[in-house]
Image 1: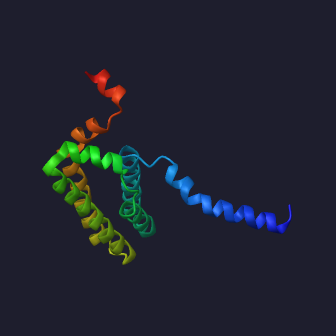
Image 2: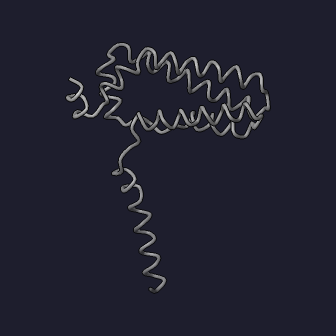
Length: 149
């Protein structure tokens, strides 16, 4: 291949990459939650071994987790109605604590990191206790919903 053809192919790939990414399947809420669970395990391991880089990495991953697909947000909002604001508030609480945890890890402040982590776990458990069953039910594939009847 000549260099002009290679350049054209590269330009075409760069131009099509965003469109290809947009047409791919978005990460589902269930997959996001599984990733967050793995991040919590990573943070626990880091705290147990005084590996603050591991703690900071897990906290950053939580803070920057993928967005819930819009179609799933709509289903959850329809199910929760006016409770959606409280649901979002718990999400923001955990997000803010992940940033606080990352800062504590970067400062090598074990006590602050543990405190942030404990509050973050409490926020996760509060959300799960309040919403997990309803959210999981509304997001369950239709075939599974009908077999549950």
